[in-house]
Length: 618
Image (cartoon, rainbow, N blue to C red; front, side):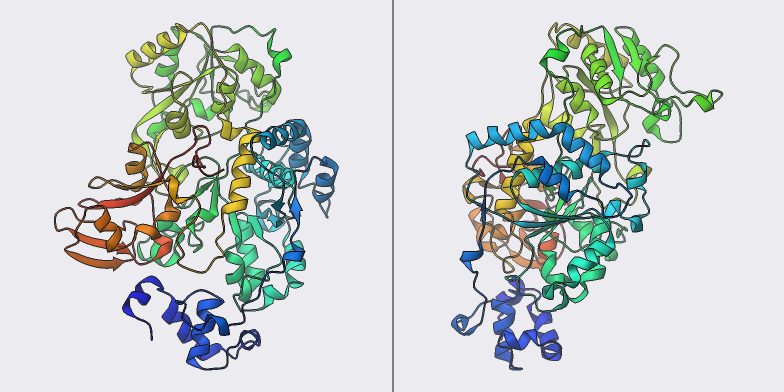
């Protein structure tokens, strides 16, 4: 029998027991693990094989497979680019990997150099070789997005940048890659795997160690794995540019609160979503590499002019007055900047649409849409890179800063979110952007980034004068957006992130020595409570403090205790002193906040310039 404490910790145990009573004969795999129809055998299996129930004294009687250490392969870094090119061969003639191959070839010398530099700083030999499946659902014909067809026709490239850099990282780190993009390739691989066709959830005999895909690929994966999906789900890493918050991730919760979107409801651990920027600590920050096109010899002859270069390659970004307040007041803003600098732009001009109205002010010198190398030359010539409020969180501001141009980052008086901006509608996040580029605002700052109210002429002029007083415009690149930084971060993830352990285990990484526990203020999220202390919320350690004992160590005596499934817990009501703990681990949330409630938060330190890792994480 389960105790009340067991039921609170192993919340899915009773449901799994009931299923086993009815279905244990549905597949022969259960009998192979010793299940014989008795209640005891059900509990043995669910505790020791699948980990849904608490362990008992029967452990020695359970047939749990033991790893064959003789089959373990150890690796070093890999600098053979032709080996990677052989893997990146599109089986049909769509040339789906063409842009990725081009970026990898162009940047390869820097990747090899970065791997050599990282090996001097930390040990990269004798790591376990992982078998990694990379499935790019966005490139499949079934996605309907046309990424493959439009990669050289002005289509969006941000996602392809991420995939290119991820593939390169995994290969340079020495792992064994299988890369697919079409559903028939995925079906062919999975149809050969016994584990994909068995409902038994043992995770010791899986044919791959890690699976990287996107939301489209995840849907395709679920379709073809069917009954065996549960055991594979812990291997998944979802490339997800804007992130997925816990409230949107748990389907049952999202549906009940009427926030379920077509992208959400995946029921994974929130840390299994890998983002382009460190949006929310609930997800893992994967990032990308900011490409630097100019070397030292290229920049010697480039003189910095009294220029302000506007961030925006489309004419609509200059639009002055629409129903979206985001666009209002841009003429006035640019006119203010014109008082101190020449204003230049890089807007694509369609020769066939000469009569079409342009929103770009006549005083802006337009250089047209530039090749990446030419755009970087313009950045080298400019003193300031001017944000207009959109696009959100692109790589261009980081490219500008790397070329010595100061980024002028528009601050939003009312934060932008799915509540007031159409762009965010349907995205599985309630995140509120306080500026066009929150990463540049929070993690870089002055003197490389100035976040300003673009509607306050006095403030804008004051900032411009402060910037122009500086006669040296120095380059700056956050380490985490370099080849070496990405190799370091992803290697740490691959070595330490393991979600295939039995349920409800306390996290061992990041190590406990990096963790502090903080009681947030009334109505404050854990993300903000940790940041206020110079720390970052670490969701993997919520389980450790989800108890009255931990609350007592934080000098809170609970008048009453309760377990509830919601994004605000653990924590306590400062008025009644009632303590509420988390009932559903998928709802542990760094961003949840509630008035008249104080969150109890796990926070970690971090390496400046490598925010995803703690100081003891390497």
